[in-house]
Length: 164
Image (cartoon, rainbow, N blue to C red; front, side, top):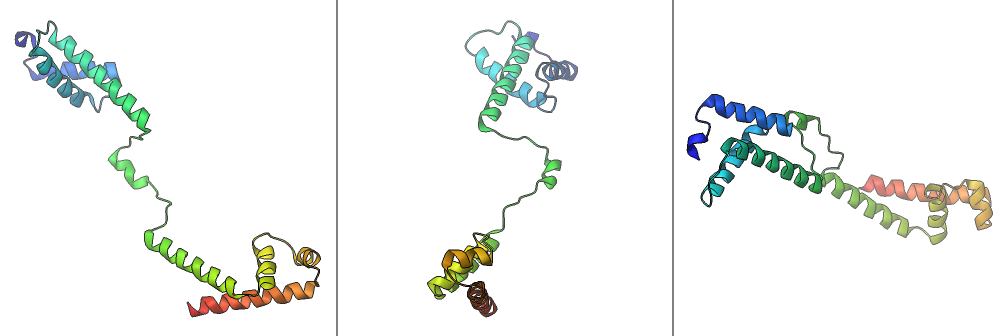
């Protein structure tokens, strides 16, 4: 077996080129060839290898196929290290998340301090997007009363924000 192995750098490079052509993965061809060589050495302990170069190329192609399957099943995205600078992480930083959670708790507490009617009117306007006239009709009050409830809620929330 070893008498038919490539003994020169040129022969090794020729195998790399064959693997590149067969796998279309030029960046990985050298690694695939090395892994195939290890497999061939293990295989050769049990039985002789008739065509070492063919064995190496076929094994490298199979390893490449296996790697592609694993990559696809895990949904990995391969990218060059130089491309990592272009990756944008839209997720907020941990301290930003904590600040937002605290502020949300403060707003919830301030809303809970309002009378139920003032809170409901404020939320109908700010969350549900209802106009003053629509709220007045729904609640059976005047538009002026709706304005006063919303102003009261806004004043209370702004005072809470000033204290924080």
